[in-house]
Image (tube, rainbow, N blue to C red; front, side):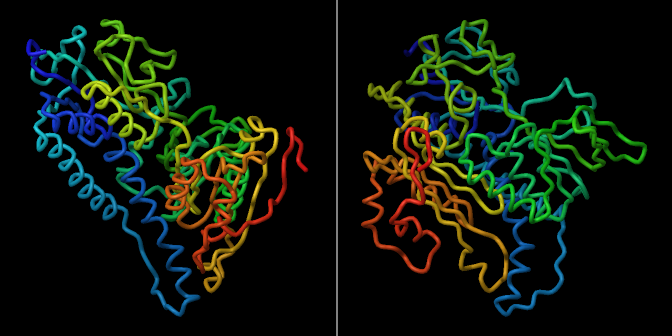
Length: 462
């Protein structure tokens, strides 16, 4: 091992790569990490963190409106987009510095450079025009928004990366896509006063989520004023002489907007890295294929996070990083556990979910109990806001194990994190029933739904 410059070289300074580099360096390993753009990766720089900040910003109009029912007189408010962007930039710069400092503070070395594999133990640092060597190499380069080069006028469109830094807030926007990124940005822009249309090719937004959540959120978004067009895609985007964009849809309708945002999926960052040259296997989509321990088909090259063919979530990449260190440097082979992952959609209202949807549960279990409560949360009673909350538990009718929990409403993401613990532990509905409620809270519904709303046996609803 001493023949190499480093014990570990990490390519990619996002959440997964930084965690692996920091923890390995803290073990006394000689570690280096290269990032060609900014440390922090998608989540910190152009993903989860700025998105959540923009979600907060977009919620204030509803807070102002709701305040009247509680006796507050709120003067007419105004919003300044450049202020939000500038304050976001300050926070992102602070976090970026922390990510870099954490690696260096643990004894690792950082490079601001693109890194390309020369062979299975050599990495060329483009910015420094030199080659270094490493015993183990970890690829953690993440992903990026999928382009749409076949769309005439695609060059006029933006993606989630650009949406955070627009020079001015558009008056009207069309967002194409039905996943969580498209849905979250539709709610963000609408909350900031933008005329928003969501265009999705599928039957209902948010595929793979529980259908009750999907339908309820769709209805709520439309009541708020967001236009949602399903079974539709854009055929072309044309720039008008006035500087607007005309988006021609397959429905025959033309939308005239200031911006067209494409949120049609993400692809891994694996191009021009030398992966093919050293024999690393890639999937048809360009993702790095790894085994259960995050090892590629090349013995000393590993990959974690969005660049692989697994789950694309920041906490998953961090978990995979910790498992990688255990496997590669602690002689403790540890496979990441991708089962029962809690997640949230920061729409308005929020979605929090963990475990199986009702439809997936029905496919796997012959007897399924569904507990469902729909109600107006207490915070909306005095405000007069006509917005329902949905709480749903999916239970295996034979073992009584809770196999799915789904929430639509205020703080749903926070609840999903806590629900991940009992579902991961395999607790039963009887365990939920024995748990004392916290009153008055919306979450108390989770432990007070004693009788199933309905059952599904062998695929048929009873």
